[in-house]
Length: 373
Image 1 (cartoon, helix red, strand yellow):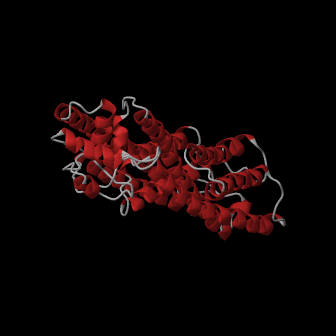
Image 2 (image 1 turned 45 degrees about the vertical axis):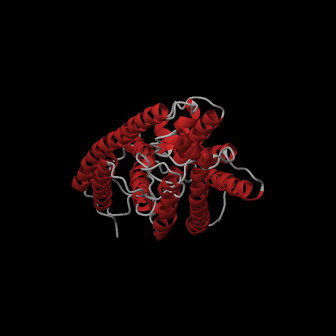
Image 3 (image 1 turned 90 degrees about the vertical axis):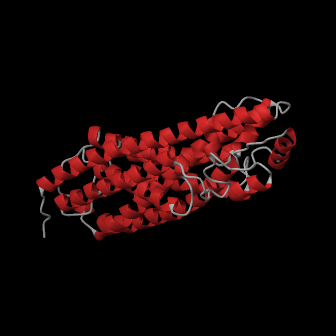
């Protein structure tokens, strides 16, 4: 039975995508406002701590302020400094309760501890940003659904649909993780990436609602591509974490060497070690999904073309991505590849994902040329 195309629903979908992009933009500004406002508040705490503990070196005062210190004496500041001592690259700040036990008083300005749990303080910009992101996801989801209704099928048959659906899944996963972990510091990066994906879909990859090519008219499309979209969304989160890990690691080394803290807003972000650990866990889950993507793709290829593997460019790059992330997991677990090396390998893996989706889809001809362009 042929699919029925509803161009009106397709037009509604495009309007909803534009509205979602606008709402994401406002949420992005709110997340950035939260970082700037919190950084300013922490800078004020720095000044108070410096006045109260004039004998404490500036670099150490900055670190003490990073846990929300409001020390009243030099002895209090020294207790904080002693509490934060440890190997380079380790967690720079304790949890809110630990900060209070160290004699620092309120944990004002702190968002999440090393375990990324929510603190007790109320941060209005962050709450507004999350609320706007939820609204944007609802609008975005409506756009994805109307695209599906307009096409009479699942909405991931070309690059435009894969981008819009992928952005929706990435932000949805981010919001779901927010229920258990305070990852609001990632909001600027995740929402920013979603905006870029929606803009790229509308400007560079827009494709009108249409029929699928015969090879895609299979239930394997739902199985194979849905897992690929979910895995790519998780890889997007770990890419943002790895990028922040590199910045945080550089900042921590600068402070440890006695340098000035020029990235005050990064005190809202957990330590490089905490980011690395969470990124590793999420990458492990995404890698399992990508493994199933590769397996189900081979099964689908056998159903469609009579062979499991044909060295098509898309197949090769899907396998390359699998190898890179397998190498990342293996190197970190057994070879001690931690810190910046692990972060860079995670970033390389995501760049391979982007290359596979953009360059391979556009410029390499093969059986997987479904870009719709």
